[in-house]
Length: 211
Ligand SMILES: NC(=O)c1ccc[n+]([C@@H]2O[C@H](COP(=O)([O-])OP(=O)(O)OC[C@H]3O[C@@H](n4cnc5c(N)ncnc54)[C@H](OP(=O)(O)O)[C@@H]3O)[C@@H](O)[C@H]2O)c1
Image (tube, rainbow, N blue to C red; front, side):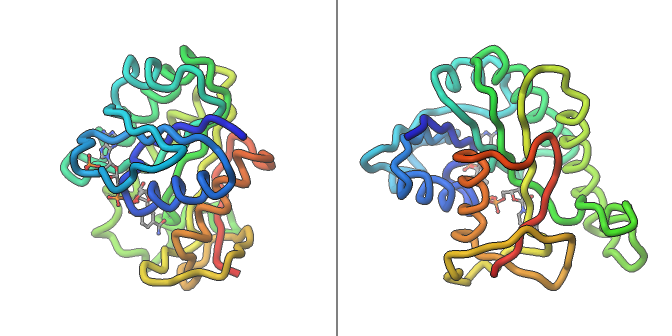
């Protein structure tokens, strides 16, 4: 049993992660900005705390005493280029101060590399309207890649996209970028928790798809 802190615990990916962590018997600290909005997360094994993942001091305070952190936050009201970079800096700094060694973050398929090493977002035909958001995600990843702390980070994203309505199969597989592939949030959470319970990938971005 581990102590796991989840930033963005009330979101689509975040709440699936909380559910899977509890199912495995872990203790979860669910970090949200407005607890009144997320009372439904309450239950045995969950502690709801108020915090902002872009604030390094808050990350350091909240994360102390945990074995691992999961980053599932996304602020639709912020400039993406500001949000993802600020969150990555705050996590690198705050988790180091808190003594948390493992971070698993939810990523974006468009920033996964294709077989020839080119990010999907740079390939011909990729919809240009999504490019600023993709670049913002990639900038956050660059902060993690450049980090010089002992943080053992991993970014996991769908190889294609989430199946928003799908119930899932209880299985997933590692996968290279594939815009046609889908994974339910529940199956995606399995991959994140597996990388907490028995880390297999380190300081990289991997894709997963439903099996
Ligand atoms: N195909 C793909 O690769 C793909 C598809 C979809 C999503 N994603 C990625 O998956 C990640 C999670 O997305 P999602 O769909 O789960 O998002 P979501 O449902 O919008 O949830 C995000 C959560 O983050 C919280 N949040 C926002 N700002 C925060 C802050 N500063 N500190 C702490 N919590 C904060 C939000 O809460 P409040 O705003 O209520 O405070 C919300 O509950 C994102 O990075 C997204 O880009 C990837």
